[in-house]
Length: 370
Ligand code: THG
View (spheres, rainbow, N blue to C red):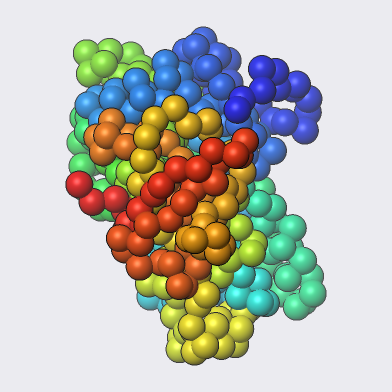
């Protein structure tokens, strides 16, 4: 279900690239971190096909940066996450769940270590600026917490490296996964990371110059003409097939990272962090539910925009939170939070579609395996 009109105001922020995204024929927007984020251009399926074959330029300005800067920046950063950051180096990106004192998910950002005393927390859709600043004030830490003017652009797809090399030079090929370098475009250094919210490969450019934002955007398009560069955005189908979870959809503040399948990013016997004792207790007692994939039988389902209850013989078995038709699997595939008694791979469940219809589905692993 999509609504036809999104009323714009200062609260729903545009980006430096919004005029270009409009010109590219965006079909729908969502709002993410109080900012516009495109969700489709041709269609989710056509965008997916293009992404997997060519290269796309995404306006992901809504991946806002929360900057921590000052003598206590590293202490505050580690205080917010169960991920062990003690060995992170300058120039590294780290996927780091952020949890509260109950060990529950507040966000799942990519953290960029810019300097020993400076971090960018590249956030998913929740107001981490407020949490971070509140912690800093409450703990009397010597750290500045701000949202700098940084607008990430993702260049994703199998031809991303070729395109980026044409704009930033051959040196982009040396950037390893989840590492970044500062590379010049027209004399201005841009942070370029090998990262992005698809598994088709690519880069993210953290655009911190208003003046060069559109020249850089246009340069990518001009340099990519023969590569069939096209518009794109985080693609529902690609990200579900690849098992990339979305905070707010597949997991919320109700869930802890162990339930979200993020245990490998949590070090419970490492540095101290908020919620450490709570998470250790959860781990010891065992989790009650876990994120799983689901293959749902049949065709013609409505969009899943709220939790759909899953049942087994009438007993609540979990919630389906995201659903998409996958031609590759010739099936609907989705992401569900399955209760312990029903989370085994191969478990059959009933999907209770709003409106009364019931469908059968089978529990499987995420990422989905062919
Ligand atoms: N890039 C940047 N900021 C972001 C996102 C991004 N902020 C919002 C959102 N995406 C944060 N969530 C994620 C989730 C997964 C990944 C990145 C951001 C991701 N995961 C890899 C994986 O699962 O294979 C790598 C994880 C690892 O091994 O460290 O890329 O996309 N700037």
